[in-house]
Length: 178
Image (cartoon, one colour):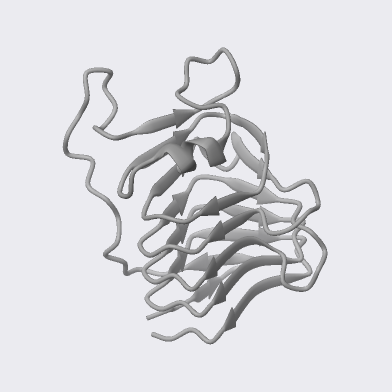
């Protein structure tokens, strides 16, 4: 199912989802097994771009993105969890071109990011969930996008605790069920 509860101005919230991943196994460096990190050059992170971490990850892994502004457009095409260092600290900036974060795989979780500056064509979005089921977008700020969050041809998608600010359209849904 897809459900939205609107609270206040620009906030989305909902109370049910079952797709979060379990971080029970911990590696020698203190991160859950399979975790990858993204950070600025010289930071000691595994990767310097979010897309490079996604491309290298195996389905089911967790990618932790350290504080900083990442100038890129991201495509999440496998089951992953992306965790930013909070909406005040971790920004994905699309640079005014295309969709900033495109989710087109099942069971993707995205949390803790500021997502801004999509392209200005009608189908460009800060976050786009398309042909994907069980996605969870939580605790993000989507600002200065054509569409803050776009859900198309997706089922069982949860959009919770997000702030939408200064987008042409806040949330759009097409051909989605439950």
